[in-house]
Image (cartoon, rainbow, N blue to C red; front, side, top):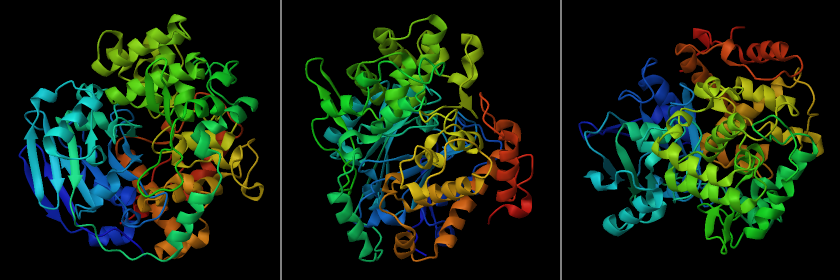
Length: 553
């Protein structure tokens, strides 16, 4: 079975000591990416560790596909204890960092401890260098990257940095790479900030030599020539469909359609797109560099989730206003989904929907934990009662845009996902809209009978995150192609995904997570029966916990 090659590099930023550990057996079993990182975290992070404490480990990984030339492989993984959910969480970022990481020769690099001062850590195949950077305190993402490029002779593509939000340990702070790509959901930027690490650079000339079949170039050519709507509109292309289905969260989830949808939909974004955007080695080019010269706004996106969070959910119907919110989140190092949602909660509490100036001021206040921003920086789950609004989150993670009150399988997915209400954990929405051929689709209504498909999709997404293969490759990555590329039966590959999901669940069980955490703030049909069906199919107990005999080795 195809897998990553190279040792684990451990970096203790407190003692400034490093160590290498061979992890060949782990790589052979878990492939790479999220798989390797989950196994390492499960075995090396104490179950009772504090997310913002020195014992938490932040683990960066790529997969074997990051040494290929195939489209859909410009991504990498970061895993750690989430300060937002209090559970084990993996976040996935696109851009161009992954191949620079692979060039270090390591399959995993983990950070532990706490530095006495603000530092940048430079990782290469020649070793690790620690650079004191007290002058970079409170700098934005572009300011920090500019320093690294001028003083360290590195490219923006080699950087992973935090902004003021990470330093202030905002619970949904991002780690930014290539300035506008994010390890976004779950607040791993706050974990890096708690370790007093402002920036990391990766580079070298020691990329492992892994052979790939010719199938990779067939996929690459198809990605280049396919006339896909995402190449023009990105994920926001689905917004009109969601609105027509009564499935577009609006006004802090109080409504499910938005009268101003034409101002923030796919056509609105496409009008502001000024060039192609892509990730490393990818010919699909689905990214959205956007610009409004009249108002001086330039960003990448927004994608559907952000257009919901800062658009319909905040009562904003101008795509340029949403673009500016997106730009500010990138500059300050904030997950734009969680930031938009928590601001929408504040707008709901104060009857201020549509107040763009207030929204923009709140973004900065959150990033710097100033005034009300200090409260909002804790996330919806911790402050909803103070604001007097409903708690629109699962396991501390606020909701993505795909509406579980309409797409019931997606609603069930939000409930059981170890990461909380995140749409990418199973991407079940794609088969309920549907965004797939009709023979692969399921009706959006109902939950019972969908658990086998949900489990299969959770396992497949975990496999993708380990490969690593972008989830938007769904129209190109067939069962046969997975088997050819990864040199294994599809059932065996899905079993790798099952191991990952179960390890995450077991870790979180040790931190007190069980069935009571698999809850939604709304009702969907036969929910309790669907939970029973899901746990039974996974081989877990009816209380949502993993029996010891089921814990993967």
